[in-house]
Image 1 (cartoon, rainbow, N blue to C red):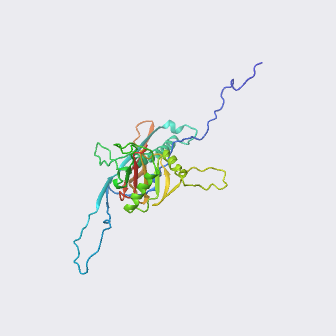
Image 2 (cartoon, one colour):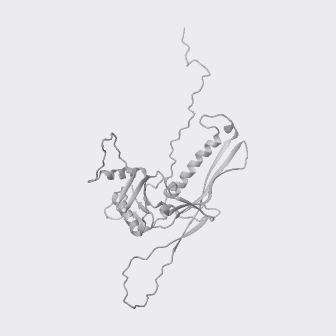
Image 3 (cartoon, rainbow, N blue to C red):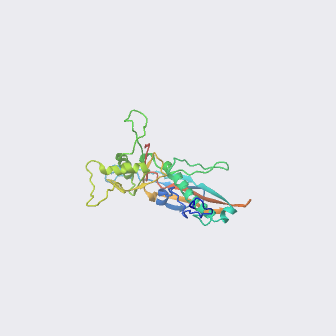
Length: 303
């Protein structure tokens, strides 16, 4: 007589894990590091100023005062950008019981919320984006961080040994030191963050293996190959990895000099019902302000 096995049974219960695993990265290091400020207009302005360079200053006794030489401030401007995600879920999808979520629309809303924050991070540091004021047919765009850093504190690397053009190459420690020095000489003393892409973290961790440098491993049974804090002659830099950072760039950031400008915070709005489904729109309106374009440095043209 044949043995009756589970292969013969009908109506076996399913065994489905009640946890949905999502490995997509959700961190937003740049916008999580900087402050936030409210704006009441879609175009906002701010002013920059600087002291005159130190100069020889000696007068003869009884001399008449020199004519004043005054420089005006520099007016900067940027605009806000509308970010949007939509959700459309059938009434049935919300009514049935599903593994891993109590309600489909709630699960999808949470997912879109994480996605839209990544879009904002990308707009800040993932692209070189100029400001677009927009019109009824053109979407507004704010100038990204990479477009708000001055030429005096930007280093475009050149890997062709001066034979012409700018050939991309890998990040070097000399690049970090050169930009940090330029920032210090300009007066920026609160640069605290070195933001790099994941691949460049391997290069930075290799700095510790350079000649003349040692690590105290004591008697620990583990090997550490990471640099969380890089100390240069011009100050300490916390090393932060950013998956959304433009792959050709690295940034030396003074977080206090950046503001995420908020015209409208994130809001989930139900849309008009047109059938046997429900729709929502997640929307927010944000911009970016760099209070002084020589307070954060940029290394670009990296491989």
